[in-house]
Image: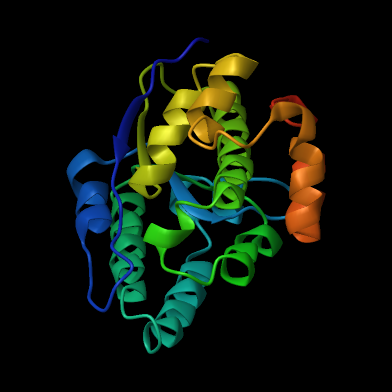
Length: 229
């Protein structure tokens, strides 16, 4: 069955206060699928919640998640935003509305490389070509995970999908979902770095960051089918 999804994207400001845009979207749009910008597990983007019918969800696991978010919120106040998201997901389940939950980001190991390699503010990191390598790797994973989810979803022809991914990523992922060719990808991500060349990119990455070089090799540049979980 070919599906035509309706995507609803909402960001969350990672600051010192609660941002309820994602939580409100859960109740307003009643999504069939929620995509979180969270690290995938050993089995890919799937989560334990998708293994149970709507009336038998492992709610103790939700309680555990909320407990951890409360602990996290002591250092990062915006984590309280996710608490309300999960409470609203539980409300939909209680109403008999099944919501599938997926974590579509790269493994935690790669996500942590941001803090190791880019200690400057985002506005400064944005000017570094290696930061765009980092973005590209993460967003190729997210693209592949979304394609996997859409391919395996069988319940509705027009599912509503809540994309709880920061807008910068979502814009790039939408571009990648169009399956652009190699020159277009290069221009989109790296075109503004005139000194960066395709022929020497592997060497340049390895010279700057062995950790990112590892992930770069895993995705086999431009070929998302080579990504292995």
